[in-house]
Length: 303
Image (tube, rainbow, N blue to C red; front, side, top):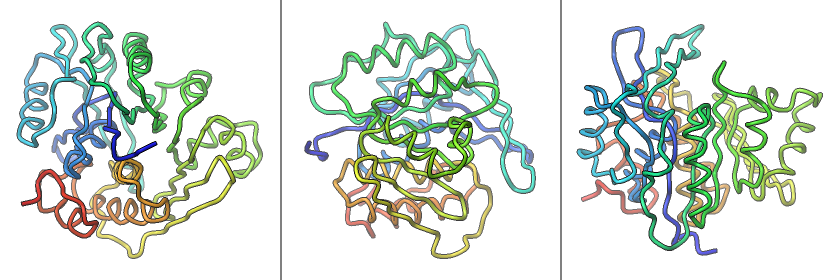
């Protein structure tokens, strides 16, 4: 497959993270990935749903200002734009996620028409908690020639093990952290057994993230591994979105044909930079330019 011919198709939640200091930051794992990919010049199509409210208007304004394709965004007259209350325990974030919000009701009948060609479909698990959005994703897969990148985000109480296992099957790539791996493979007694169990469902790579311990990409074909650890201790403001940052660069590497080890190194470097900013995304174009120039790619905001 010619990876350069694929375009990222991002499905799932867009929401606002509310922090204890009163700040409100635009986020949601799929949206964060789409935001980063756009800055990298990869023209993602984001499919989500926002309320017809002040927060929804902020989403639209941010996307227009960033230059993103808004044709996959739906507006809901009944349900509000998603929100999450973020709190911290010993530096680790926890999330109180509002329910019955707009991204739970992505309408299969209002999906945009995709042009012919190959797509890389990225999605997580949170937006699939509602049957309406789950049906929209199923239709999207049915009508689109795509490889799937599944990014597990297990948020209590919004997931069921059987549904997550079904979602993983047939994916080309799977990203999850060590705690999530233990949650979905509770009968296995160690990490190696859990990885073996998951590898039977995935056609290419499992990306296992471990925060400050770095990450490992494990081939489901031959079991080969590519591990990376942070080169330096970053100035950590918060770790919200660090996994999304890592994932966005790994996805970029799949689209641009980078070797796995190079993708992992660049993903780790970018994630280490993102933990130094508030929230999961930067609105400063210079933040991204330092990476696109180092990587030798033309980002959307490079001049």
